[in-house]
Image (cartoon, rainbow, N blue to C red; front, side):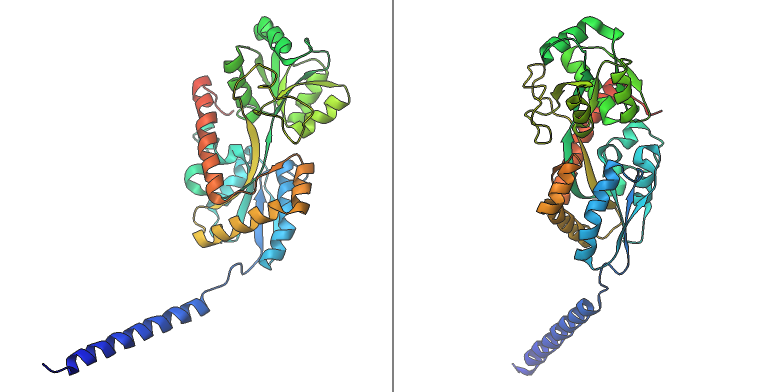
Length: 331
């Protein structure tokens, strides 16, 4: 049998392999670089708000890392959901968002008319920072410890009220969860924001509230409010002087946090999402940025996209269960 057909076949295969390799190398060389223009970070809250400060803190180092400008674009309204919808629908591969947990977990559960589905339309990038809430009361609240305070709250029944920055906020859902775990029954009173909640507590219009620790601690140290306990299983590094509700003996395993995270449209190519996840996670963990975020009231996380996805899943289940059990609907 002649060997020429065999040699010819080997030669053709070699030529084909060389051609394929050459095409792959050429494609790699001509593949468009990213980013090619300004990266936009959409924030659903006004300048000076916590999500805005977080976005601006990471924008400058992210710009240096990418070699392109990074701008913060504030699009306020609907508790951040207008901005989240803009991110979900962006198609330019140069738009991301910095959002709070409500936008990325329970938005659709609270209001079926929400124009985006956080689980389907947003791609997790990185969990940037977390913070427990601090159960706070007026300075003249009864009791010298958490157990005494909760005894008074149970005795008061629905004669007491609690304040929140709105229906469907973590402060609202968290308090409804706390009510089921401690057998208290204060009435919900929503306000436009946490500053108004604080004023209402100081004025005696409401008897308790779950507040971001940075906001509450200022008033507590000034003697205007009283700390009851932190919604974490142990003390928080943000306010280590205040015991957790677990430590106070009124709950077991109770953990509730607010958080801020970066997300992209689901349509953004996965390699770009992975690149942003790595960069933002690394930036958040640098000593300088970590210190700035801590001053803003955040325990730095800087997770991978997978870490954020897991957190979204667990928080959606926890908060979604309370929404269903209590029949909470956004106004």
